[in-house]
Length: 231
Image (cartoon, rainbow, N blue to C red; front, top):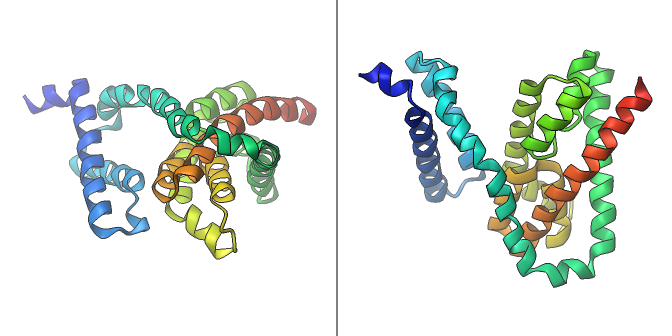
């Protein structure tokens, strides 16, 4: 009976929702950035699967249904962007330059560091799109020849780090502007960082939502071009 239940998509969906709900409760009660709901629920699911001996493939049957909702959830970030569109439009010049600079520096710093440390060609290519949202990152890395599962893991890790310490790091280095902070967090840590940014500032969250789309667009054009030039 239990094995039959685990083999159904319901198991993966229920486990994902239950882990996130518990992580959200813990985050709200503690108020600590180190209890980020996304990072905590991912860690909880991994530990549960390891402890129970349930193979990842069994969980992934339902996990794919949750993954399908990733696209609509990113589109939903357009709502705060629409609400604060006039304030953002007034700053269109600096925002555009900032997103382009962030996209280039993200690709160059991650891939360049991996190359300097002796990483293989596949690893270097897999690191390049780590700061764009998962569907775009997977599409890019499949075109240029990286390792898609590694890229997916790095994208989630980058997002969790940005959500945990992105706004605090900006304040630490003296950035007080909501727009600049949202721009940095959205460009560097895509949707997961943007979800955290929306808790900090509506305007910053709206800018971060814009940065997700434009960073993905710039990276999608930039990386294949660099790949061709580097061959």
